Image (cartoon, rainbow, N blue to C red; front, side, top):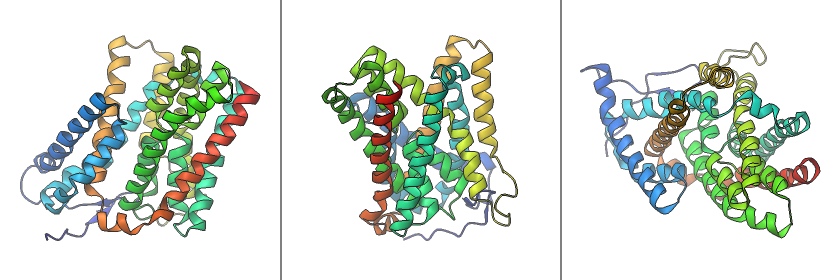
Length: 348
């Protein structure tokens, strides 16, 4: 078995940086890892398109199947670049999927509820994780993934928390759990909404506020009705927009090494980029080609990041986590559904 060299440094958020090979061009060193991650991501996209499976879940599972590739040190630079840098650029591009006008159309009471829901769900994840002995940072990661936008939020939060607080094994566990929970929610929530005799607007609010992944939230809404789908879209994109301030608050709550808590909000550059893209989409009339192409590019970047995370994950540590490690995601999902249902009845 080839041993992996120790990382030579860590970035500002505690992510471990692998040594780049001393020989060859810097970008050439990225090609082996990027190439494998890209091919695996294409396979995930094919399976998702032909069998209707969640694309991020497929990317993660195929990445885990290719985990043996991580034994080759030539892939480390490219996989690290994909799971960190490409991830952050993907988060920036997600900002083009929402506008300030869409958020305002909800009304102040609904907006305040969504913000409070994210806080309650993240608190649930944090408390549950501490109860099972996994640590507050892991719970923040799990609760944030459930409360905001699934795998994308998990990746973004892990980038802020850093690997010293949320390891690759823990991130992979959250990605698997939240993707599975989101798929189950997409399948059952519309049926539950029919059983409860919810109106189209109430059902749309419920599915937009409680289902983790963006595509699955919208899919569940439109499977109920056209109006429910439109409502779910606005509610879900509002949750996505709140990713940026959530990341800033997490950066404040979990300061970088050497900083005092509350010494100042070290807002990551990709959070500012996210907000800039949202402002651009809100105030500038962008060409239809850009509005249709950029979300696809964002999905592609996030998919490669998820796949690379699966390849880089230490399976031995992942298997050691145990069933208790999924409890923060399960508890957060249950709380999210119950609170969202109550709000849908009262507000929608």
